[in-house]
Length: 198
Image (cartoon, rainbow, N blue to C red; front, side, top):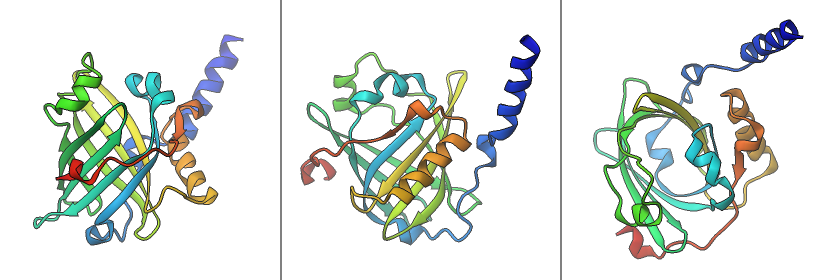
C-alpha cells in the first residue's frame, strides 16, 4: 500500500508544472494592461489566504505603465472599510515579467488584520495571458522569511467573465499545484469610492 501511495505521489508531481516554468505571454504589451481592472479570482497555497478565502471579495485595480516600462498598480478593496495597496512593479529583461516588494505597511489593511505580517516578501509577477479588452491572468511567486508561496489572479475589465475565461484561470491554478478547493472566484462587492485611488 505504501508503494502505491508513493507511486501515486510521483505521478501527480510529474503532472504539475513547476512555478518557474510558467512563462509570460510572448507578445506582452505593457500599454495594453493600462487602466481599470477588477480582481475576480484568486488561488494560492499561502496559508493566510487559504484560511480567509471565504471572506474574500472582488476588488478594483488601476494599472499605469511607468516611463521605464514598469507598472504602478493600485489595488482597492471594500471590506468593513475601504483599503488600498500601492505597488511599483519593476520590469525585468523578460517582457511580461516584473518584480516588486510587498509594501512595508498599509495602514488601513493592518487595522483590519493587525496580526498579519506581510513585509519581507519579494514577488515575481508574470503576466501569463492577457486579452487587453477582456481579461488578464497573472502568476506570482512570493519569496521571503524562509518560505515561498505561489498565487495566481484573474482580472477582468468587467466583473462578469465568461465560463471559458474562468476555466483558463482554474487550469492555471491546477497547473501550478494549487488544490481545487483553494481556487476562489470572488463574489462581487461594491467598489471603493474614487478618492481611495487619489
